[in-house]
Amino acid sequence: VMELKVMADVGLVGFPSVGKSTLLSVVSAAQPKIGAYHFTTITPNLGMVEVGDGRNFVMADLPGLIEGAHEGVGLGHEFLRHVERTRVIIHVVDMAGTEGRDPFEDWEKINDEIRLYNAALMDRPQIVAANKMDMPEAEENLAVFTEKVKAIRPDIEVMPISSLTRQGIQELLYRTMDILESMPEEPTVEEVTEVAER
Image (cartoon, rainbow, N blue to C red; front, top):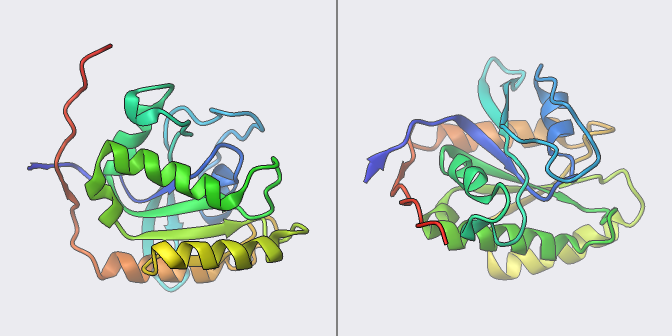
C-alpha cells in the first residue's frame, strides 16, 4: 500500500455543468474559469475554504468525467487519480436536471466509474450536494433522488444547496468540516497501476 500525498481535503465530483466550479468560486477565493461546455476544467482548481468558525480546508474542483473513464477514455484516468488523493468526496448533482438528464442516473454513473477504477474509493465519505435548488422542478426531483439514494447507500447524506442563492452552502461546509475532523489525516490507497495502452 502506497501513501498518497493528499492533494486536497475535499474533491468535487460530478458531471460537467452541474456547478462544481461555481460552488468552488462561491466558497473560496479561487477564480476558476467557468464555461458551459463539457470538459471545462482540465486541471484541478484548488481553493482554501474558510468555514467561518476559524476552521478551513482545501477544496478541489476535479476535471469532468465521462463514461468509460475507468478504461482511460477522455480525461478519465487523470480525474480518477485526483479523486484518490482527496479525503472527502462532494458529489455535485444538478437537481433541476437542466440538461434533460436524470439526477439519480448521473449520480450512479459517476459512482460506477469511481468503483470500477478503485472499489476502495467507495468507502470514502461522500456527501451529495444537490445543487440548483433555486430552479423549478428541483424540489420534486430531490424527494425522488433522496429516496433512491437512501435505498442503496443509507450512509450518504444528501444536502440541498444553491450556489446561486447561497442556500444550504454554510450547512454543507460545516458538515464537511465535521467529517474531515473525524477522519485520519492521510487516505491510504492502493495505487492503481497504469493499465497497458490498448
